[in-house]
Length: 125
Image 1 (spheres, rainbow, N blue to C red):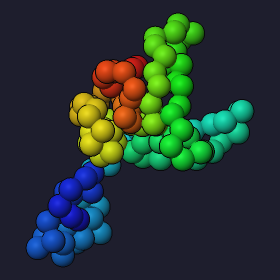
Image 2 (cartoon, rainbow, N blue to C red):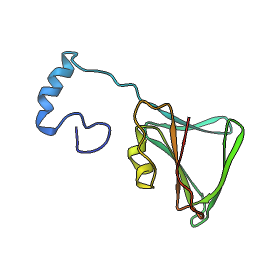
Image 3 (spheres, rainbow, N blue to C red):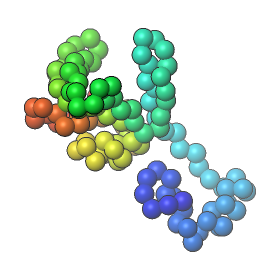
Image 4 (cartoon, rainbow, N blue to C red):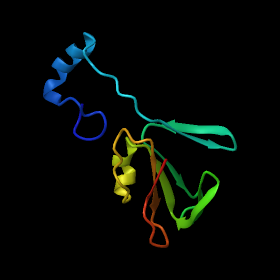
């Protein structure tokens, strides 16, 4: 229930009706992506929307080497990187200039925060 985001199927005025439908089993489940972040083969965390990478030292830029399937795509200097699922593509990644991904796409979006050189977001399988 709400105004924005992935949990907005129900308007506040329709809460009681929606709750009654849910309790009677009248609903559909939607499968969504989840993103996992690992460091040195150890799970750091999981999320439904996105993962954010920034420098541990304030005001320091990251040097990001972007590879896909062992093939180097680009090297980017930026304040950070957001890797978003299709669900998360409408949140912080979108605010950083990334595209909105249709929910059924088998892809992630990589959006760079304040990149040093002009670089667009990447959509990767």
